[in-house]
Image (cartoon, rainbow, N blue to C red; front, side):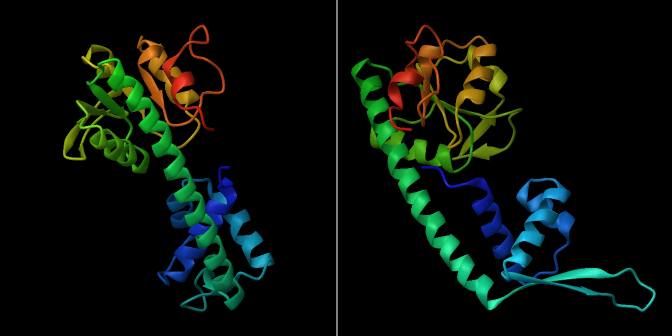
Length: 219
């Protein structure tokens, strides 16, 4: 059961306000990765529930009024509740993902497939990396977007280089629904039977016989 996105965003807003650092709606929108208008709606909803207070102030009489956000006692309690719920969801997600990957890696091992690439960076890729290590495997490469930088001590290469890479399997390392990511890899000409998804695909990639559809059996 995936945690609802709005709950995750509300927790992030309450956390940001509790930090006590002067915060503009624009900065908060950038932190959330959402539009400014949507951020404003979230703030108004939290204020309406009594979780935060919004006060206007200005440093000079002629200056434009600014907004200050403060967490209420009720907001502190709500933040603690959301944190507990989010942590519980995260633990459940990690356990389910690790089980899926263990099953997938077991299938690969029986087939003699050892050259595995990670497609993606972040927490999902870190968990996939730890699971690979349990099977004595080291990823042959990390691929994400346009590449650049390092992740897990390896250079991050552009996804466009994956078709030319000599790999037996590709872990699509994301906790989100994998269909969009898989579709992008298919457009690059990658064979679906190489995909290892952390969550079950909503529909088969190819003739109902894709690795992604078989491996990640739990949604």
